[in-house]
Image (cartoon, rainbow, N blue to C red; front, side, top):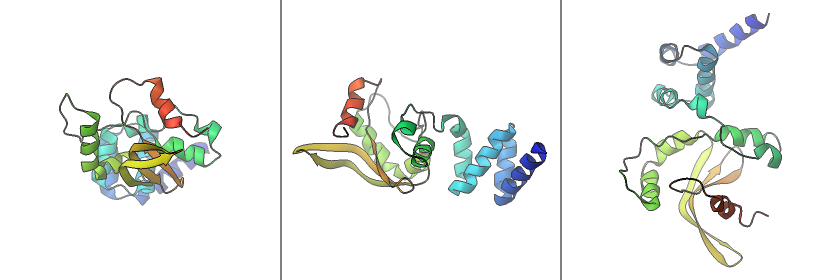
Length: 179
């Protein structure tokens, strides 16, 4: 009985995406649960075939929601699930054209130049607000590297760009003023 229901779900999903998308999924993904996941994401995100191919090539199903976070402790449902699903680890920036060595500023400029591809990598619901976004907190000036608004979560998302290994002071900087 469970197999019958699973097959019925798969047929419904397959019928909702274009034939070319189905052919791409059959050709590139042999594992049925993974294939079904990409088909569902295609429906949810409205991916064209080229975007679907890019997402398969970057192994999105592996990276989706793997970042270390405390969303379930800090946010109520469904915001915690949505926040977790919106993040990936690691992000793939293979569309950038930077050569070593480069600075964080050059990374920021190149990302801004490729904002459409970057927004596709982030996923649905993100709206670009600005770069080096100025904030004043307690008469102190701060500049956020990249600021987005997430339409579904109804909140701002700050991306602080750092090159190299993670340092604890990075988290401290992002948590300033949230206590």
